[in-house]
Image (cartoon, rainbow, N blue to C red; front, side):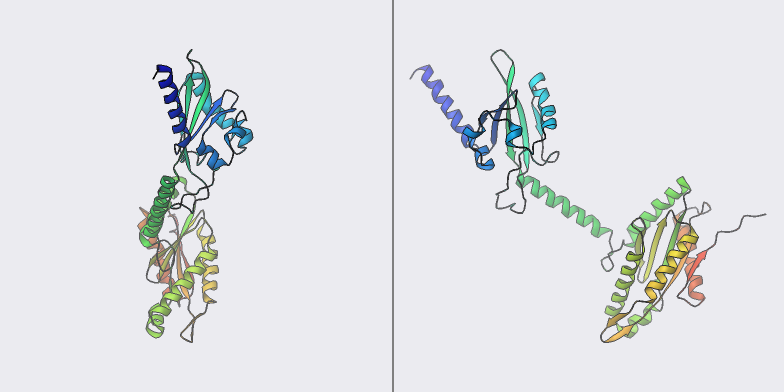
Amino acid sequence: MSTTDDDLKAFHWLMDMLQTVDVGLLVLDREYKVQLWNSFMENHSGIPAYKAKEQSLFDLFPEVQEDWFRHKTRSVFLLKNRTFTTWEQRPFLFRFRNYRPITGTEDFMYQNITISPLLSAAGDVDFICVLVYDVTDIASHRKQLMNANARLAQLSRTDRLTGLFNRGYWEEMLAREFLRFKRSQSPSTLVMFDIDHFKKVNDTYGHQAGDEVIRQVSAALTETTRATDICGRYGGEEFGVILPDTTGEKGLIFAERLRQRVEGLVVEHGGQTICFTISLGLAEASPDFPGHADWIEAADQALYHSKENGRNRSTLQRPPSPAG
């Protein structure tokens, strides 16, 4: 067999491989017109090679952002450098449907893209080769792992019964808010409250009824607060609310609105009607507090005052008057 026959045979093998490989392959000229279009591209786009040939990539796929793609390939043409795009940077170049059975929940194929220069014998780059890798399985599994980690992080800082922040995470947020207050001197108010005579509710109606009361109070709290307010279950039947950018007087308006809302709640359990109230204590952040624990202590003192004076009321801890 002659050298020419060997070369021709090797060329046919190469072309056969390019057609059957499970990677998208297309060659574009400087006008971004298709010169080569393998079977992967045919199968996933639904466009046969003879129809794609000499057509503009941007006419075939309007979803390809022309400005971005031209900028991405400029260095390939001019500097003869290879370039890459991963699915994390851009989920796909071509909006191909996903047909993989394992990741069938994904609507489209996630893709990694490699763009390489094709040098002529003179060393010029008149064509570029675009390789399209289907990485849907990898991307889907990575997304699932990220979602699972996010879910675990959420569970680690959330109280399961109420959906509010748990005590540990809520106190972290309180410490951050106190530091923000120390820097900005912007007002911030802390509200501590608990459910009046909650032990009696548990003893009389049972712990399931007590849990339902806690859930109802938590729901009322969530419905009363702003998106910027930070709510937590401090422990048992006690709750804490951080009201950023709020003076004590305005915090008292919030506390009374919450108190009245809870007073109007009714829990039906086991054929019995349960009514309940809350007592609240408030303290505005003060530069005199050495740390956030002193802020809690001030709000707790106000809460104690509410309970000692009949319950079902709100008390604002007034800062000490300046001497003189």
